Length: 219
View 1 (cartoon, rainbow, N blue to C red):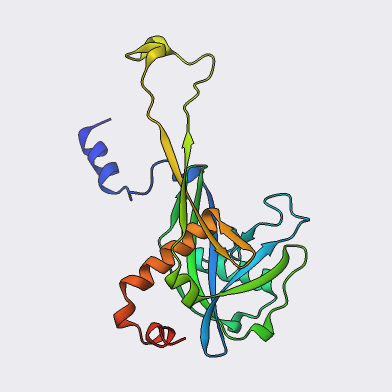
View 2: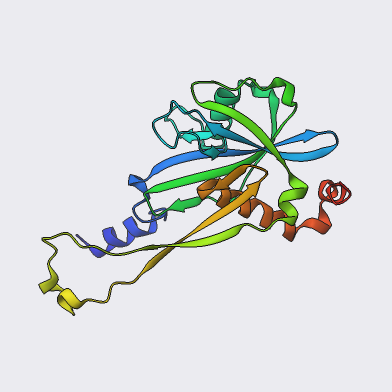
């Protein structure tokens, strides 16, 4: 290969996350809803009939389909399907930071406003129940954070003879932070709690500039 060809390929390459082409990609919506002049965050409890994580608390969302226009479209579509909404029932959809899971997933979270709780008709095949938590509670309640340690366990045929240190190689210990919010008898944890904590961090950084949050202080 000629040098010109090498440089051209690199120049025209669009950088992304290395290995992300094989990741599973999901989109979720953190739904906001107004109740009695205060802002609440809406959560789902996954149906007990589901194979994955039955009974756990989550946000509406799911895998991004090839037919979705983009990640935002996937988050809206999943929310409509799971909560029985119409397209116009969800407004003000904005992105949060995307999350890369150590288990080969990229999650694209969004926040969105649901106009009225009266419009909600959860799909029983996916949603066992729904509930809301006042934003004022979340703003004044820090999550509890616990560390989960991962230990490296090479396969039996790992070529230790090819690396310095061999079988005594000093593998780095990896840690995963697990976030927990407890509201009444509900436990919000895992990826849902991490996205929620990120959302709250953003709000706390911009409290002075936000008229809605100014109102929330008086709740």
